[in-house]
View 1 (cartoon, protein in one colour):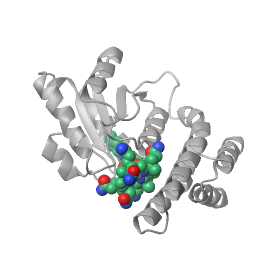
View 2 (cartoon, rainbow, N blue to C red):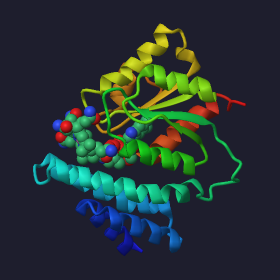
View 3 (cartoon, rainbow, N blue to C red):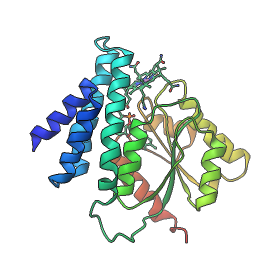
Length: 221
Ligand code: B12
């Protein structure tokens, strides 16, 4: 089984979107755990591309192709992730509004987290990238969610996470929501500094942190 994970990782590095789709379909057909395919294949591939870009061995077009392959494969896997057997299909652990903050278009990590939160039986409302604090709150009000999950991948857009806290405070609604932040340049220190309610480095930790928050507030009707 490790071979298919290696193949997935390699096809992301190569930016081969057709093979990414084929391998994702194989994961489903062979009933391989899609969560393992995400962690041991897809994420490993994009991490390696990111490291190569940082060290100057890869260039922006390589990263864009890898990101496209990632999206193509994840699109195939997402329904399987949503149907992961983690309890009754009617279970709903609570609603979460997730998005990438204002000024930032990175969405791979956010999409993976959305898919895995869905797999963990949360009801996830993904508002997309480049989203203002107002949009997070608007969606949360519309769907009755009290957890906002904000992703930021750039040091320049981390401040947009703080702007969500500011927006909640300015509108006297800080107590109405839990804000969890994440993404490459963020840290627990950063979350504490801006007054966020939680931070996580990985999807597994994020699911734990959000589950703990949900225990503290009742699930909405
Ligand atoms: C792919 C990528 C792109 C793609 C994005 C495609 C897409 N659809 O997302 C493209 C090519 C478009 C791109 C563009 C840019 N990028 Co870019 N990109 C990356 C790259 C290589 C990988 C990011 C990624 O997807 N990682 C994989 C995922 C799985 O990891 P992740 O996002 O960190 O998410 C995980 C955790 O952080 C966590 N998580 C994520 N979100 C959240 C949210 C919550 C609430 C929680 C709890 C957890 C959580 O869970 C995830 C799963 O484990 C990184 C390098 C890197 N090492 O990160 C650079 C990187 C982030 N980009 C960078 C830059 C500079 C840019 C550009 C400005 C480049 C340019 N000159 O145009 C633009 C920015 C455009 C914009 N306005 O946003 C820099 C940022 C540097 C900095 N200090 O700010 C990086 C670090 C590369 C580098 N080393 O220079 N990029």
